[in-house]
Amino acid sequence: MGETQRLILTGDPAHDQPLIEQAGAVIRAGGLVAFPTETVYGLGADALNPKAVQRIFEAKERPTWDPLIVHVADVEQLRGVVKSLPPAAERLVQTLMPGPLTLVLPKADRIPDLVTAGRPTVAVRIPTHPVALALIRASATPIAAPSANRFGRPSPTTADHVMADLAGRIELVLDAGPTPVGVESTVLDLTAEPPVILRPGGVPREAIESQIGPVRLLEEAFPEGQPLPSPGTSPRHYAPRVPVLLCPPDPSALLQAALDALNRHERVGVMAPDGWQLPPSERLVCFDWGEWGNWQQLARRLFEGLRTLEAQGVDAILCPLPPAAELALALRDRLLRAAHLGGE
Ligand code: TXA
Ligand code: MG
Image (cartoon, rainbow, N blue to C red; front, side, top):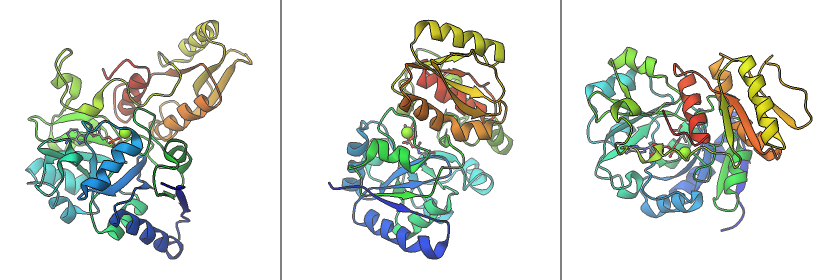
């Protein structure tokens, strides 16, 4: 295939709509379009066209045992991709969707097996990003879309990240600037009782529990040693190409960990919270991550930081580990995976 076209959107509907229509035509013709969602950029294809979906796996070099999320524009379209909506799903659809929440539900027959990796369930979400919604409507079909990165790499939060991983492998990128949430959606399996969070993400556990009562994290539902039901939860994931080192989340621990890392690595990158002191060294490269405790801000800049430090040629990346609550849980999960320590 030829070059990947990059269409720059401005936020002005009169300018953007024709470009989104063009992208919709590519989807309808069985092509691949990378597009912004509120979480990260997705790599979209017509979810009802197995040949188009097959191309997603090839472009990402993603194994076909890892199923895809189906993106729909509204509740009506959502009803068309699932067999039924149990009461908890109805409730979440009313309260937390559209948003960074993905529901795993029994699949409708029209969803190809390739999308769900042969499972009887489908993962579905309604994004809030206006470009994602406009693209789904312009395509007039549900859009299957994983994150638009090569398999195992940090998810893309800008069109530059998409191009770095997928240029020449896909028809089109819709570039609408950085994505506002920055970590992927929360994946909630509603076919389990109680429901299980397969992947913590943009909607915190606490927000879900306030709507439907207790849910479990994967590691609570499947203690160590048992096979995991969600294929995408393998430890080796979200990883930059250099080792990620984690330290306890306080300034003195980071300072000490930075000194240790400088003894073992030539150039050390640091995901540095505002105002945390670091040893003066020319071999230290800082990424100004943001204000510790402001998880929205830190989430937005997490993958950008990992990719930026990696591109600056560091030999290791050091990062304080966020706590296991609210949005911080998603950051913690991605960093543990990036460090190959698995989920907890
Ligand atoms: O925010 C997001 O969710 C982004 C944007 C583009 O929407 N998408 C995304 O997709 O992160 P992906 O493919 O990178 O991650 C989807 C996760 C994987 O861990 C996959 O294994 C899981 O959802 N998943 C998909 N379908 C499933 C199913 N039927 N049962 C269990 N897990 C499923
Ligand atoms: Mg992904």
